[in-house]
Amino acid sequence: MNEFQNLWWQQAKSDYDIFELLKSQDKAQCHQLHYLQMVTEKLAKGYFWRSGTPPPQRHVAFIKFLRALGGVQQSQRSQVIKALNFTNFEGLQDWIRRIDPLAYSLEHLAPALSNDGPNPEYPWPHHSPTNTPVTEKFQVWQQLIDTGQGRKFLKTIKLAVDNFPVYA
Image 1 (tube, one colour):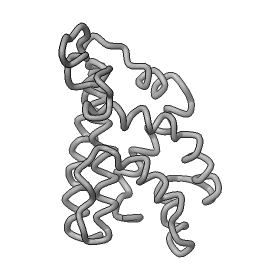
Image 2 (cartoon, one colour; image 1 turned 30 degrees about the vertical axis):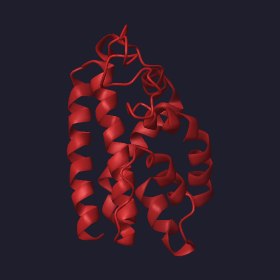
Image 3 (tube, rainbow, N blue to C red; image 1 turned 45 degrees about the vertical axis):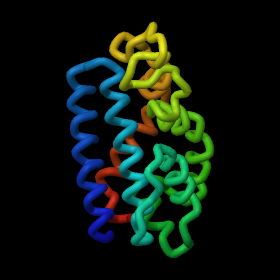
């Protein structure tokens, strides 16, 4: 892990701590989702700093990150599957394919990607707001907490944060 990756990892860990705090206190979904989305974005950008050059300043890194993990070289596979608690690389790849729609939904909560719709930061639509994040029941949140796939997703994100130096 290089110094740039370490900076992004430190911030991802801090954001994850706030996500956990908000979740433990049952705060509004928008706040929890905001921090979770930031965690995933920072994990991805930190991972892509491995090249030594900055990743693009966009909010579309998390799915690329997952796909990159699913395509690592043979020599790195055991580190990745161990860090993320999978029994084999094919299981990780299968999980990434199945989780893609959920990851997409989480990534697209960023206001820049939400197409003037539900996002955890700002009332919408932008030019004539009728909804506010603090009262919204986000569909992606329900998927995360009410389904086995969502709960596994959350556990894997925690492992990805905790074990970042192993696979970075």
